[in-house]
Length: 343
Image (cartoon, rainbow, N blue to C red; front, side, top):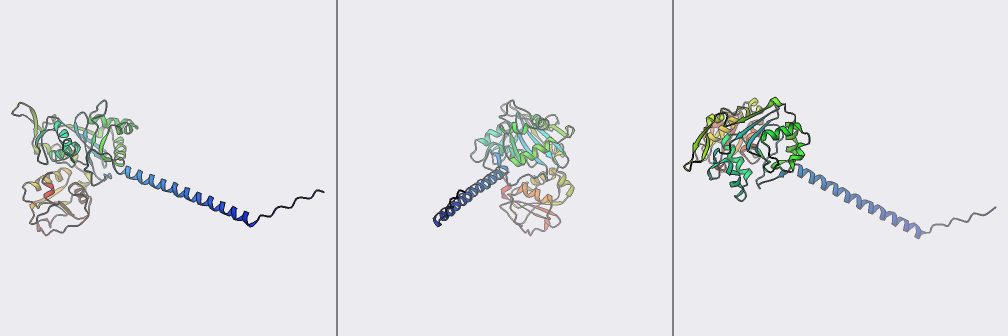
């Protein structure tokens, strides 16, 4: 019967070598896991940042808040013409306001009167301003409606009207991807996704298109050089903008005081007009005894307070006590400061 050879005993050197190899493998796997984990975390952070950063920003003026669907969102659309889009998520409605290119508008920041068709290029020629920003500020003043962002689709081929863009978003589930390549906007990708999903669910009979020229709220005038322009009376204009009121603000019906803290006239009236068109209940317009450089909003915690902070401030969360007794009867108080003068 053959004798099996004796199994060679492992020496301590062999055991030590195997242990070293095992430690090296564990170390390599640990480093690999660390690298993979770092890459995953970096990708997640980058993805989150991209999701909540402007898609393609046209100016260096970023917005101080992100639309979360609590309120209406009012957007400037620049396509074949200039329009304002209001999406009402509470009631599932869309309103489109078409404004003629020949409308003669007072442009803020001291630029004076310009036709609508020229304002975008004017803003683009100003360092640190941008066409989208200047158009938004101008039309906010003109309509007395807060404009929350812009959608520039002027490079889209073939060009579409604002109503055509909405129709595309509603009927084509992949239209958002097609429009993104041509879109310049200050909205985040997250806001664009919410907007696409919201508008896509709006019924056809819940879409309303308003043409200011057809509504007879614009008057024809000729400039000294014979150029035809359209001008508007604010009272006539406000009478056709009831569809833009925010149902959340209207439902709360908070009493609002607007106080002018500057030596400039008409600022309280200007802010009160916007709040009224928003659906707010302004009960007081007055001059404050104190002077403020920055506009402040304070009062009873509510959706109305949050919305007014979005519109009139830069998102600061500090409470500013006021010694003005004129505001004591109001639940929400707006103190218009020097920073509102050029808007």
